[in-house]
Length: 300
Image 1 (cartoon, one colour):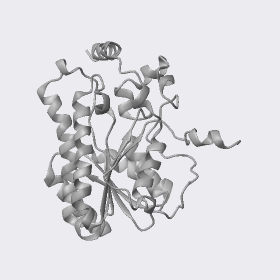
Image 2: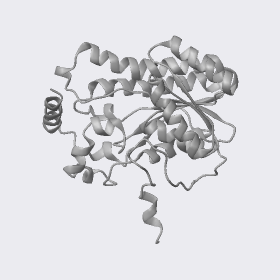
Image 3: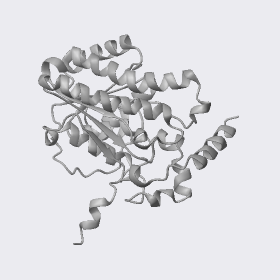
Image 4: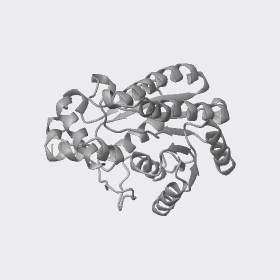
């Protein structure tokens, strides 16, 4: 029984947007050999670590965001650590023409894209009463419309004819109506619905479409913006069944499973990877409102 506890122990990770100093693959290092993945929001956080883990399993990657300088620096780190090719590209998921241009460039370089990770997102804490019309629209535009835009371009450019995998990074915010998250919760719930629709329509083209819903994940911009440090300091994470936040490597491993042949009959589902937090973590509106007010005053 000595190894039983290891089943819940987190794998090594680093909080910064740097590659892991050491990594021991749990699956065959060749499980994604010959595949090419496009990851939006791939220059930092979950997107960066997912690119790294995929590359450590034989995959070549394209990481894309609006900030070309950021993804260029990230691509250098990823290629140096893994020995795989990583192409940085600039695109705005809200603007289909930029997506088309980026995908065309990627296909010139790689000829085929097999995996799409829709990871680009925008979020912040804000009560609905203080949320501007434009702020709400911006999150919907980036998260929901952005996911559809990139998926549709990839479908038309290559997935329709060659098949592949789409993984949409969502969240559990809409399950209970998370306080101060009406914008992101609405956007992510719509993506989960989109996932099911696309899985049904595109399955005959040999395309699997799934969502992956992380919980609180350390070392990410979302963790910093959404009160992760506050939850640490107040021991709120003790109420999560696994009694901790997750890390980026855990989410990357889950994406690796969904992208790999191990998930060959999995489509139209949302995989929740949150340590059980959505079941038990307090949805305390007054406390979150106080946190929002404190952070808002810091910015003044």
